[in-house]
Image (cartoon, rainbow, N blue to C red; front, side):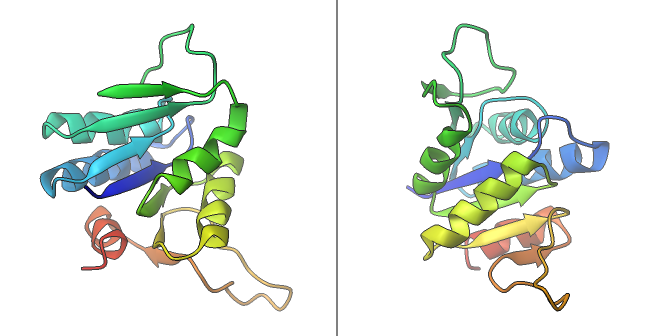
Length: 155
């Protein structure tokens, strides 16, 4: 079974939410398990998209699980590790799709790149430049949800 982490900010724009929902739909249609942070924003939108297509969604929560998470998950892993849960999320994934950008999302992109050996795809998010203003190699930048899923699954 292929597992793809869909990462993004809890406070997302309407465009980011639409992208994330579509990414979730497309992954579920391909039989891919969606991993997310079990929070709001991009995480909830990706989960809702996948579940709307009868997909499996595993949420990896940063807290102790006492408050209900907003994401529509099939199952939830409670880590009580704060942002350190990002490492669990990335190491459990066969690919990472980051939709939009926040500091937490940037850490997930960096963890995916440091891990190596998996596609790290960015849709409408961070563009990291070196000291000369040139793009840092590694993440694949795409413009649509369809391109994000194709790049993550190496179509």
